[in-house]
Amino acid sequence: MALLQIAEPGQSTAPHQHRLAVGIDLGTTNSLVAAVRSGVAETLPDESGESILPSVVRYLPGGCVVGAEAKQAASEDAANTIVSVKRFLGHSLDEMLLNNPRLPYRFLQTESVVPKLVVAEKAVTAVEISAEILKVLRRRAEAALGGELAGAVITVPAHFDDAQRQATKDAAKLAGLQVLRLLNEPTAAAVAYGLDQARQGTVAVYDLGGGTFDVSILNLEQGVFQVLATGGDTSLGGDDFDTLIVDWILQQAGFDPDHSKTVLAKSTLRRVTQAVVAAKEALSDQPHVDLEVDLDGGRRWQGRLERAVFDTLIEPLVKRTLQACRRVLRDAGLNVRDIDEVVMVGGSTRVPMVRENVSRFFGRPVLTDIDPDRVVAIGAAIQADMLAGNKPDNDVLLLDVIPLSLGIETMGGLVEKILPRNSTIPVARAQEFTTFRDGQRAMAIHVVQGERELVGDCRSLARFEFRDIPPMTAGAARIRVTFQIDADGLLSVSAEEKTGGRAASIQVKPSFGLSDGEIAAMLRDSMAHAGDDAALRRLKEQQVEARRVLESLDAALQKDADELLAQREKTAIMAARDALATAAEGDDYLEIKRLLARLEEVSADYVARRMDAGVRKLMAGRRIDEY
Image (cartoon, helix red, strand yellow):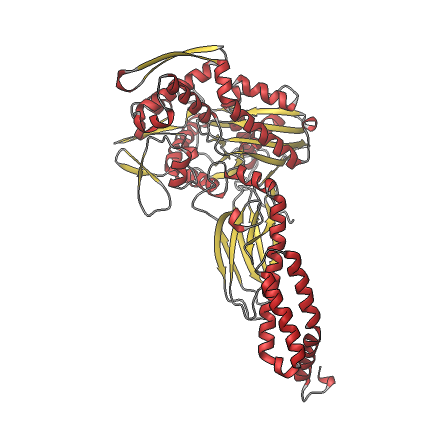
């Protein structure tokens, strides 16, 4: 693997001049902006002294409002008030509706691949909505710091794929922000703890936010923050806790939760959800909370939610997070005894049951020294200060990883992995491929993401055609395919024919990201089907080789069989050929392999005669010394 030496954007050529840079935690539930001032990283408050900005946008005929004011109007104007927009970034409309069945929004049916929400008689995308949140944070930072920003480090979940990362960068551009770097949220948390408190060792970062869950294992040593492995679930967070409590309340009130999704008014569901969020937060400090919610038709439900009931409801989701922790430890080649510290990140880690279960799993008290809502923004601010050139003598190096393997499709629908998951970024890696047929002038390059052996079981990212390959015999062309991932985790793919110098490339920008839970499902499937996949790959490889040999043999026989073969020899070769062709349609790779060897054996003399004939033809009428 060849690591790229990439100059970070925003490097200052004048170290003495302080450049204004911030770290932004663009969260599902809340967002924050932080900066380093007088050597200390701190979150920046608004004019009211509040650092946390609810990630809520309400659209009105004359514009929009963002934050607490929008959140207060969420129940009365549900259709025009967008919450948890981060869950929409990089997704298609079908994915958004599938993963969020209770959405109270109206969607515009257009031919555009980017979904649009109809709000206050206008249509907006998730990128535009996210940009409104970022605009507020940018203005807040410029007011607090007293000048125009040189750039920002924006954090994203470690499991965000290419589409989600690109959507985040697009939102920042719309908000007038220069992105110095997209930084994985767990890595930002490690920066905050490692730099502020000079910790060394192996750290697990457990990040449970409003809409996503990440767990990462990092090694911190002498200024190097290396991510050893990462995992999680892009559709698991505090929002899912809320949904379970809403369902419980509806059941207590005599409703069928599934049926009520379509029967209850959207504003009613939003109102119940708001009450649930307040109750959930109260349960972090109290053994129970009394609830009173207005339902449709003048109905009102009153009841008590015990912390024990809440713990029982969310227990399956908490277990899912611990299963991800086990997978990530296995990927890193470690066990719980190797973990020195456990860092808790995200507002949902305030839930006592979450902290207790994580502490029990890792066998040690968890770290909550830094406010779990603020730790990611603080780490991003520290990194932004470095990238802006304000600490030129700082030797801190961040080594992040990719969450899933990347590769291309080869003959037989197989996946050739070029970058395995948990590869350190930035990185570039190349691999050579060749043509399948004589005279082949083009090659289709299909970029895929995932852990399975067959293309159909992985995620398609991009396709492009590599044309004008010089005509050669099958297998003679040398086509070098290079995968390059930058520090933001964004992929570009290039191809070059080494003989003629022909080149082509593509910046991989898929329209949509992975569907919710797809990454975790891919990893689970790869483990569950490892044996089947290996056997299927062996079969496919033998089938591809058989087809290549049969195609070459048929072309050769048609050209000179009558000249070079006696009838007895031709009959033997054809019998071996037909047997191989029949076996290639079956599923016994050992039989195909055996018959390939048999065909090679019976046609060896024929191959030798063809080579001799080719040499004689080449030398006809010439002397040895001419060569």
